[in-house]
Length: 220
Image 1 (cartoon, rainbow, N blue to C red):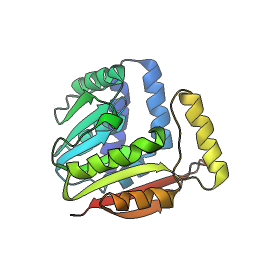
Image 2: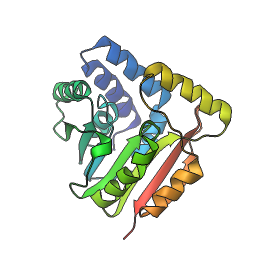
Image 3: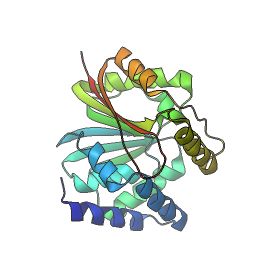
Image 4: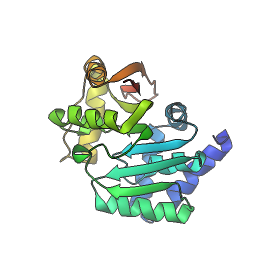
């Protein structure tokens, strides 16, 4: 893994690689919300090498980051929006990254299609309809090798004021996107039902976001 200064420089290079100033502004905002220490905390649970799946990759912001700082990883990003995927591909080309690919695919339609060492979803679960979450998690469990990790960063329903703050921002960003926040205990229970052992902990932020990190390991 790259040093701290190299990781900071990678963030700047990635944002500059986008050809749309609105997207660059959005990315600065995302990196301010998911600060580098959050990215590093999540990244420590990724394997040193191997295949990693990014579900709901959007513009490729986080997969570009991990592909930059960990060149021994092979990342695959999926998102339902063709425009976002096109921008992610162009940014990867500008950065000269050959260890990340992007494909158009809706997370709700995902079916296990390979053996991955890890997968992650960052702030995706609460944007998937409640009835579609279990099928998605089941397919991800099938996609991971025994002992592989699924890393989920999402938000809890408590405390209420943090939930409402997050809900207001989610609606501001995209009023059409469904929003369903899972109580942390319920999401952990569901993850365990589909075949994961789960370690869960809060991620403290200066802003009132009820971040929760789920480190899930597939068991046979």
